[in-house]
Length: 188
Image (cartoon, rainbow, N blue to C red):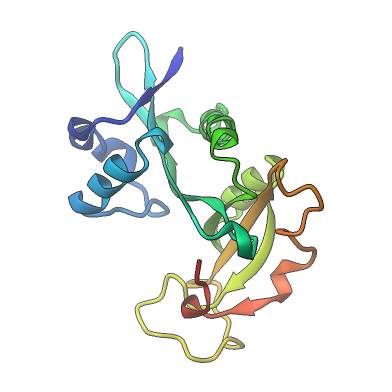
């Protein structure tokens, strides 16, 4: 059985089995610490019983301005240990975030997923997310200057899910796969 628990600083020592995945972004300790300090309610883990092993985690934050229709929750990382995949755990973590986000009253939830991560994209689409735009060179090492120079190996889809506060669905769009932006053009 899986339970959701708040993330604690000492939980960083348990992340290796969860983070050993080519699709999982790894961060330094100060980055995780910042999330624990600024957005503790949006940083939590899934734990398996009876062994207490961490099976996954969600790390998110709120950002943007309401006046510009940018006030949102951003998923920085949602990841599940290899041995606990394909049982709905990532969906559970995402749905828990939606419940927690209602308190923040944000307009939408967004995340970046690598264009080549087909399973991730399918998961998010099943949860109601859609592609808002393609971020050219998001995962690349070089600074991209041409938004039309697409490369599936380094590009990301910015996926969004409109929340109840966005009554008219103004924060999502159709055919977002055809809208190209550079990473430096994403400002909240």
